[in-house]
Amino acid sequence: MSIENHAAIHWDHALIKKYDVSGPRYTSYPTANLFHDDFAHEQYMQVATNEKSSIAPISLYIHIPFCENICYYCACNKVVTRDKSKAREYLEHLKKEIALRGEIHANRPVTQLHFGGGTPTFLSTSELTELMVSLGRHFNLSTADSREYSIELDPRTVDDEYISLLKGLGFNRVSLGIQDFHPPVQKAINREQSVDMVQDLLKSIRQYRFDSISFDLIYGLPHQSVASFTQTLATVIALNPDRLSVYNYAHLPERFKTQRSIDRLTLPTGQEKLAIMEHIGNTLTDAGYEYIGMDHFVKPDDELAKARFNGRLQRNFQGYSTCLATDLIGLGSSSITSFSDTYSQNSKDLTEYYRLVNSGKLPIVKGYPLTVKNTLHREIIMSLACRLALNIQDIELLFSIKFDEEFNYLMPRLSEFEEDGLIELSDALITVTDTGRLMLRQICMVFDEYLSKNNAGGTKFSKAM
Ligand code: SF4
Image: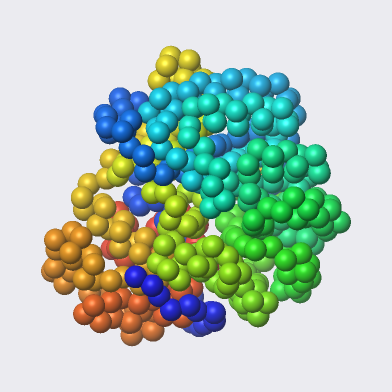
């Protein structure tokens, strides 16, 4: 199903306030907090019984958990260390997991590959080469131009030599953690990287002709204001990335210890955050970027914009992606796999991760096998999140249901959304409006079986705004 292309975001402050509740970003459904420890190596192997004969494309995600420095806002799974020998120990165990997974999925062409962390470039050039050789030995890595092989870069850790190696190893996409260029903000979050440093790095990246450059920005950080972010946005636009992910900083010092280093009195208020967010949306769309939903802006000719236009956008643990493969295999500590109507997660604890792979087992410690009902709700949530629409007839045919009967209990909520102008409802279609695009999480949350009736996600999830 194709959808209309939208450029504008419609800001209605009263509605944004009304629907400002905590909620998941739906990188999976059900969400990861529901994974349970009854799902491990044995359950995964049962699901994979016929896998060896499969030749359907797959995605790989490789997690490198180490960082040399701590960024105070960080809520990722990482190990902060300057001891480079940790990388060697990790690599030896990761290669064992690669061999185990490769035995199961070796025949499937890897059309998408993503290195995340932590800091993937904590690995030296020779370690990264060794890792790619191992992946190439055990998986069917694609060499097609259409492949999407990406890596997250910390601008403070890479130079021209590293970039040339990435190109040589087959990476064609990079994403850079920028967050904010304003020096007082960078100091307060303990992540200082100058515009000149990023500019030089981009020069290298462009010289080696990577297909796509993506930036991560964060709003809601200490000392940020509309005025300070205006300068950051001007610099960002001049640097001309193809994609931007703009995340909301959720200050949860009781959950994330390192956030305790941030003085809460320096954080922008809710009102200021909303003003910054509106400013970001307007500035980026005025500069020609398209808002594809849930934090992501892309150039109109970017693959993600085309995928959304053609109804081939999907969400996974990295956010939005093009639908080159439906199964995603996660490798490394804490990685999540989405495979054949199951989710599974590797141990976050390095000692346990090492112990499991040494015993010849996949290092899975929890997971979730989806029920048919889960897959129905997932299909609906992903359709709304990716296509901004739901084709009711398609869903009825796919799941042999009568939509009105199945979701009768949701009609008052959907009608309220319609009255508030967030969606348009017809017998055939639910369409998210320009106003509703900012409340996309809240619209999806209605179809989440596991949230309470008032749709509040509690403190498990960050606020959508
Ligand atoms: S934000 Fe990235 S680089 Fe900074 S500590 Fe977290 S994982 Fe490491």
